[in-house]
Image (cartoon, protein in one colour):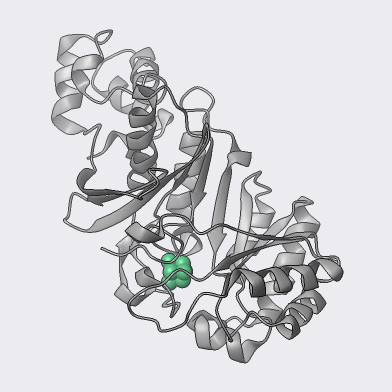
Length: 339
Ligand code: SF4
């Protein structure tokens, strides 16, 4: 079992059931999350008997890196990990000067089937446990520590739909957020969802400080359903009603993701239709020219058209950023992760 699947209280219960004092759990917690130990041998403050027992039952590196690719500019790295049951996932680290953003996976594969996404094209394998989500972060945190760098942001935008694996994803975030451990601020996390209204409402009710991004991609149901099959179940009106609820409950701004696809959703008319849908909502649009995948023939919008789209939205009072594509040469961009 992975040590990252335990929270502090279960760890305390465990060590006390082994007749060790509860403070040993705190020492283990600090070793794992503050000192980022990668081997039980490093827990020299624990009695040997406890260390040996922990090592026999819990792994501190449950993910086996099986492949690693680096983009030609050296700024994006993608790592494929094999999980204990043989499933594989991918995690991407992106460097921007001294800032490092990690894009983590919440599932092996994905059930949502978005047509332009390589993960969607591979289908659903299984949910990741909270520990498997946490372990991706710890793996990279240790690597960065060796380079005297720290993670600055975590986006749950890799393989999988995090709101389809809601409980484990939130447990992982809570574990990483714990001040007595890794202490990663809630506001430095972003969860990206295809837009499952019930889960957006639940997330709103929990009043978390975590940022929320919704993959919108189209301003009419016909176009959106052709790209995101989930739209046939939850249409734009339902998704946007949940978004309004979220903003009303939390006062927080939503980011809408928009993969710009040549001739499909990148026209000035689409920008106007989108602006009409979003009017009055505290939000921001992140537009990114589509990243290519072998299973989808759509092409990326040109920079010129992307800027026209952005200008039209901004004219209507909706802030918009056209993002740079990152890691395309190693298939590490949004929607390109598959094993
Ligand atoms: S875009 Fe996200 S939700 Fe859609 S198939 Fe890909 S991983 Fe799943």
